[in-house]
Amino acid sequence: MTPVVAPSILSADFAHLASELQALEAAGADWVHLDVMDGHFVPNLTFGPPVIKTLRANSRLTFDAHLMITNPDSMLDMFANAGCDSITVHIETCPHIHRTLSRIRSLGLKAGVAFNPATSLHALPHIIDEVDLILLMAVNPGFGGQRFIPAVLPKIVQAREIADSVAHHVHISVDGGIDPNTAPLVLNAGANVLVAGNAIFHGPGNYADNIRALRSATQ
Image (cartoon, rainbow, N blue to C red; front, side, top):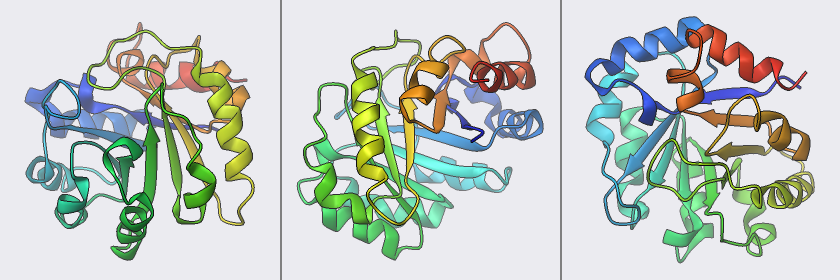
């Protein structure tokens, strides 16, 4: 199966986000990974629904919002109205994660659940019926350009086993330190979505070349 490539716009030129999205679409990207950070759950601050709504008018790509924020339940409607296609919340910030995922789906969006590197998957079998995407962090969230944490690989294998236990398709996405060297590792472990920032925006070639390099590294 050809992997889904989801450029993380955390590494894009924030002064020209609309043109960056158009360039990614022309380069063959599948999704856009929207890194939403609030400065509380993670030590960084990025953007929110107003920016996403503006970008939505400039792109036909799938918008996957990764909410690295406290109390995401209070803002789900805002991100849905901004034009997101899927919303991924961190299990660490959702005390009633089943209800949160159900609410995302009730808004007509795909629902994702994210796990930090040190967070186990013990709760995943209990919520998998409400999950469309599992996001496994291969770095500690908050900043781009970090080094890949190899300990995530067994978690990918475990997540794939749990995902395959349900009838509906569940994407397994890996975020952090993804490049042509690490992409084969995570894909062989069972992931099918590659979230990449520096490898695409600051790689050796243009965007199309860098996206192609991620895909060809899995052949």
